[in-house]
Image (cartoon, rainbow over all chains, first blue to last red):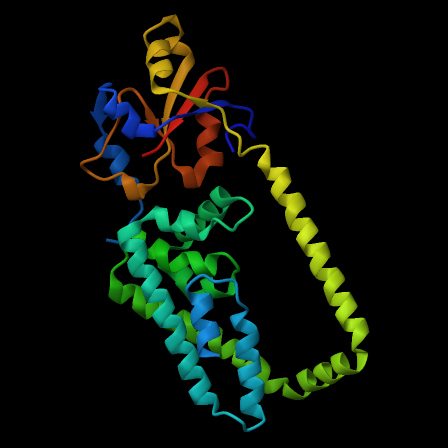
Length: 41
Length: 255
């Protein structure tokens, strides 16, 4: 959908797992990002 | 009928509605008890839905991706179903069975979204009752019409067979065309982690946007993300994209 909308998008091979395995920097998810997530619990 | 309804509830592409209509017609003819048909249909749907609910709870969106594999556009299949839940919440379960695609996705979505089992059960039973009642009632009330239609089919014989075969071929060709139309967007360019790291360390770093597109199922209080990335809600992509600059390279990742 990103490319359909005209964005120059690429997928990182292996995703977060590959990034983590390569020892690259991570950060915790901000708390305000978590509040937005819809759940029923 | 029980097997067909259960199969559809488990995600198989079988026409449970047709079986329910036939059951209603059989009940109108006195062959079967309408209450027995309703009970069997309810039981089949609730069993199938509950199994998918539990599977969704423990397998998360991986199961949804599997169920959507047969779809022309799996990403749209998942996102469209999730959109219904985000907009209408648990009320989605009351009418989900009437909507092709969402009928199979609703129970595992509810499970993955941590809906309490008793809440799911209540809403699912009401939704299943509504669905079964409507189609059994159609068969029951229009038995005579259905019988005359079937007699007409038998009389028309070969002509009906030919029309049906051509209709099926036409539908199959349409699906192939739709698949090929979306196929061009399946080939998304990929980039290795090493290349991303290299570009982030270069002068190019301001022209890059790292985008986390994980669904909520993988995004909890202990979750981590690539440093400097932003999260985009995949189920609200069209709105989120309005705030994204088009002059940057976007590197997307999930789990």
